[in-house]
Length: 318
Image (cartoon, rainbow, N blue to C red):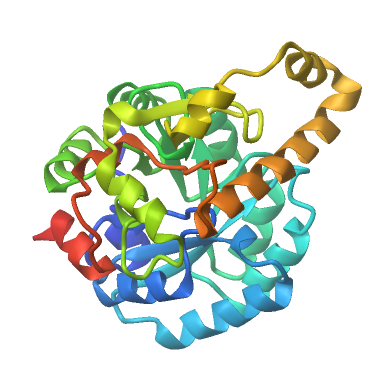
């Protein structure tokens, strides 16, 4: 019989089993400090910082602001689309963070170097095959990215994915996607998850440094308005179905499909498309244009107004 995995609270020393998920362009220091003040964990994508010095500065501020029952981490993209990966990893290990979440690519180097500094490593996975690989490498927990996640998502529903991972793996499973209120959080905990990585409900927060129109879209649109597109990076990504998204479509063109299947060209095409897609998302997040690409998951269904991070957390813990 398998031993019961540690809770997220035990792993990170927090009070509530929640990570404020890393969100490209949305997550920031102010949000993370507010989250730690409510005794949960929060994570920021390293790619939210243009330079390594900006990343280091953010980590230093978070170290000073850390609370006894709060924790913070950095999300690292491991594959070739992230040209700053090793410098970002070095900054995390040099200055110290509580945990690192890895996305895409092989996390072997991150796990080895982070563990040498006492840093926990959680790995994004979308299926059992990926989970068993990162478990064998020694990661501390799995981030189970399901088909309800905002941004890059998996193909399996939360129930199926959690059941598969808890059945075949011995390390803790943290669910990512589809949690918009306390009832949904408690359900995931009841079927085997030790915690949840929650992002989309926090887009419409006072602390998010994005356009008011982006926040209002999360209020005005609901779960039925979220669609999956491959236009941003070639990888399935959930976005709000704005008029621009409807106009451009969500499927790859024949040329894009051809280039992505060509082994010699694939990695370079993926890098260029990722950078182009990231640029579109950046523009949409900060300014209002007809080319609106707003990333969000179905859990925006529960967003009815702009609130502070603390008020949003209360939705899950009170």
